[in-house]
Image (cartoon, rainbow, N blue to C red; front, side, top):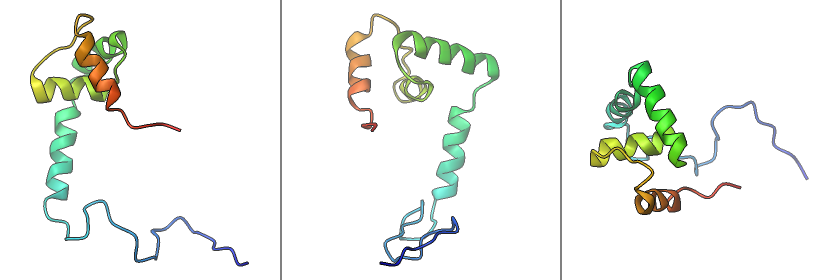
Length: 93
């Protein structure tokens, strides 16, 4: 049995799909820049969001997405919405 060694480069198999998909780059970089801009907040705002997120058991990303998507600042009284966000987390192994 031969082992394949990897130099850390991209896979050479046909199964490899680049981050922007199989149909060309399109708007991939525009979306990436927009996402970065949405999550880049001034330091004080980012620290405040991170602290509030930690208090209610969410990540910074989850808390910020809730603000961006729904315009709501979650608190300890939003038990149902927080539980729903946690249910949609990817499974970690």
